[in-house]
Length: 277
Image (cartoon, rainbow, N blue to C red; front, side, top):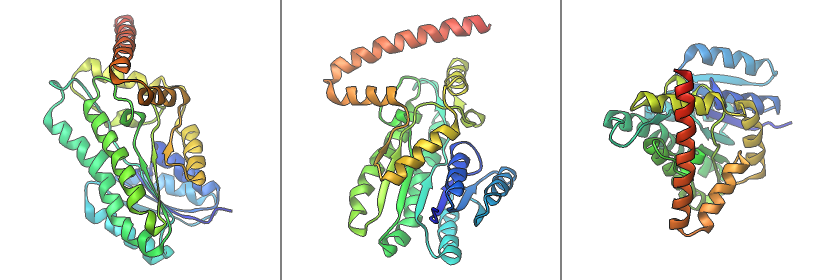
């Protein structure tokens, strides 16, 4: 029986919901935060069906007060927290001269500063407990940076850097930190995604909807990584090998490999787009 106290942002759908249910199946008390109250109520009912304490909070990760209120709720009702999953995120695609600065500010506020706000809100509690685990959901795009995704790549790379910093910073307080870096998997990410042009939008949709794995499978792998205490939680073996190759090779060599792979990917994408037309 896993009686951990868990808080998950973006917990009403996608990976957030899948993780919430994975923890509930293990016997944890799970509190989810989300913007979508209807989905939040549906997910809460699913969590309660497992027979353990569960709670839903309306939580906008762009609002520091919402994250602070979540930390206060966890302290007041469950006496603290054991696992904090900063999961809420959005996607944007497009070339640097096509994606608007407004879209850049939008994705930075959610993907990066939303994680920062979650860490800031819960760090004092975890430090006082001398225990706990912060789990920041980044992406393989934070380790390997494909073209036409500069805004998404930049925010996810920043989450990796933040997590590496906190891993060392919080060690003396016995607070663990993990960063989750999945490649594309089937989820509802495209519902809110923004794109600089139609081609980028189609590319993003295909990468998500045609992915081999779904959120439940990714959640199982993430749960196992958290339980082991892994820092990098890498859910896709092929992309993990590419990242390790990137670390081992001189950058000019890796750059040439990426150029070649990108040309092939773009060529296939153009062929598929022509076939769809």
